[in-house]
Amino acid sequence: MTDHKGFVLWFTGLSGSGKSTLSRMIEGELRKRGCKIEVLDGDEVRENLSKGLGFSKEDRDTNIRRIGYVAKLLARNGAIAITAAISPYAEVRNQCRAMNRNFVEVYAECSIEELTRRDVKGLYAKALSGEIKNFTGISDPYEAPENPEVTINSETQSEEESLVAIMSYLESSGYIPAVAANA
Image (cartoon, rainbow, N blue to C red; front, side, top):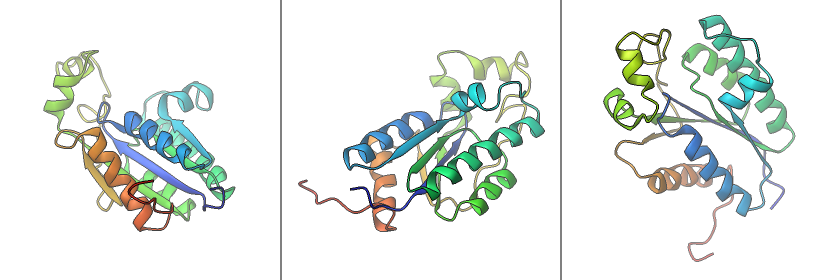
């Protein structure tokens, strides 16, 4: 299948909430269906397109706008652009939505308690104790989306359940064709 319309699949959520894991799972599923896909991972974009930017609000906003712009270029050329960046500020996410006609926001929800528990690097514990400054969700704000197209909760849903919820939305909304259950 190569005649699908391009769109942006925009994952947002706190660090460790499952954005990157789910974006890679979705990428695999869509590739099996012959879709053209690019994953714009927050860390990779920061390294390659936003080198030199810090973590001030202005720098974070600039980074997210760059991701939104690249996603727009990909989508308008028929690719599926999957983004997996925290994108903590609603205003900038909404700007990215406004520049992309076909935009699907997926909110990966998870409690700070659970994120702290599963954090192998101990970043949440350090942020909570004040060792790390400007940590999104602790000492820096995270504005959860008010009306995402899909909300998954990585605390209560398995990765597979989350994948099914996202794929079902994409199929039922006409972004990708449905596949027969036994296909």
